Length: 72
Image 1 (cartoon, rainbow, N blue to C red):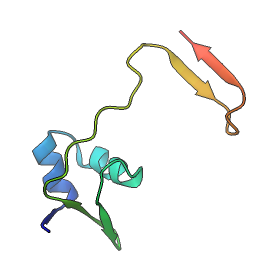
Image 2: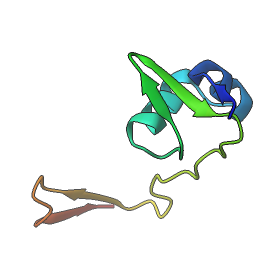
Image 3: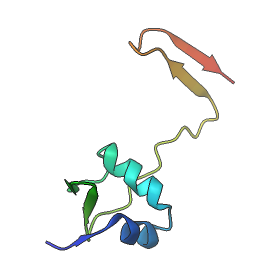
Image 4: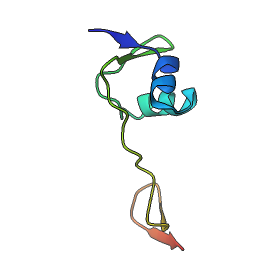
């Protein structure tokens, strides 16, 4: 299997290196492996969909996820 680096994935998907690194940390890219401080991403990996809120309503939860505060 062939792999690409964070820089190569960022260039391929048109996003920043930091964003790809965050996607790797959050396990949003399937098949990634970390060797020391270097992430290896499968060359055929698809760019994950954007998981940010699209409705315009921000929902803030407490750390224990019990209380929900809505900001509009």
